[in-house]
Amino acid sequence: MNDSVIKLIGAGTKMLLQLLAVVFVVWILMNGDPKEELNYNDQPIDYGIWISYVAIVIAVAMALIMGIVFIFLNVKKAIPRLAAIAGLGIVALAGYMIASGSTAEFANIQSNIEVTESVSKWSGFVLQTFYILFFITLLAVVFSVVRGAIVKLR
Image 1 (cartoon, rainbow, N blue to C red):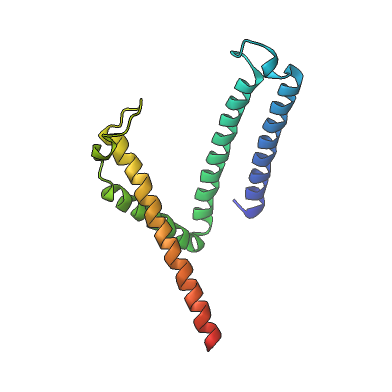
Image 2 (tube, rainbow, N blue to C red):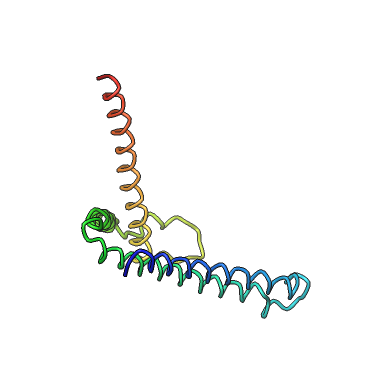
């Protein structure tokens, strides 16, 4: 595959997603406002949600396929990107290992949602991963500012 074929596939995917958006808008305009009827079971918005799901699946599939094609076509350029993905994987693994999974901190909360150890572990994983990425970003910004100041002083 050369670059013109990849651009053609991307343009075709873009046109397909735009067509889905136009179909959805036309569907709503033809069927009127869903608030006018009392029966909400078969409204255009329901079909719009399904069209959105299809569009998301198409976009994610194309992003994955094009990424894989890029890796095979440009192995040398893909190495830093693969290293970045591996780094994110390591950060995510660290966040999962740090998360406690304890339900003790939720004992005094009045809620209809039951917090199990699994829910606590996964929510802790997301929070810990966010915190790690936030502090890495903060350090990168501070490093960049300090480095810029040092370069200006030279």
